[in-house]
Image 1 (cartoon, rainbow, N blue to C red):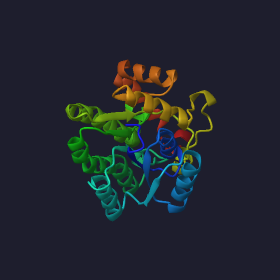
Image 2 (image 1 turned 90 degrees about the vertical axis):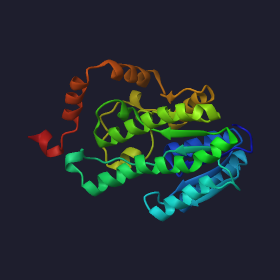
Image 3 (image 1 turned 135 degrees about the vertical axis):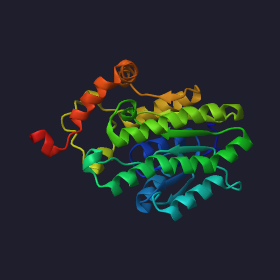
Length: 263
């Protein structure tokens, strides 16, 4: 899994966790296929990896919400001539307002990118992994999926459950599946979603490199879920034991629209 012949395809690879995963796998001698919408940013990531690690990176610009682009990435994953050994489903975005206040078109786009796209890409890769009896799928979820945190959290709950189920199905073939469940991480995610996180203390923030290091460690140990930091592991433990009605009520108050909060 960590030899120079291992090829890793990473979605959302131009920044944030995706770029951090690229650096993490490059440090292990892997070849990379970098997927994101912005070709210039992908080229910059690939050039940096080549300078620092001598890594061979294939740049594959794609808007995964475009059916033709998504099909092209799926075709690359299914290619027997250029096999991919590891898939990192990382691409995603969030919305600043709760479901009742967001345009339904935006909600559908988010659901497609967080659920439909990883499902399709994973499905494209699995026949090759089963045949070779090795490989891995890493699905980037979120601690938001552990509690009732709106439609983003619901989508992330799906990706965690999907990963845990797929892990069982693929175990007989030697294929590993890991749900990566980060908390607040210093990336572009919050800014691009228009989220106000100014009230959050520094102690809650994770660095992308720490999330990736923990994920690669947990992948090697064949764990089903990777959660970085004692704070978030305690959060996950509490989420399993707190009454759901109590948690749902508290989370609903935090998700009210701005006009409702002012009322």
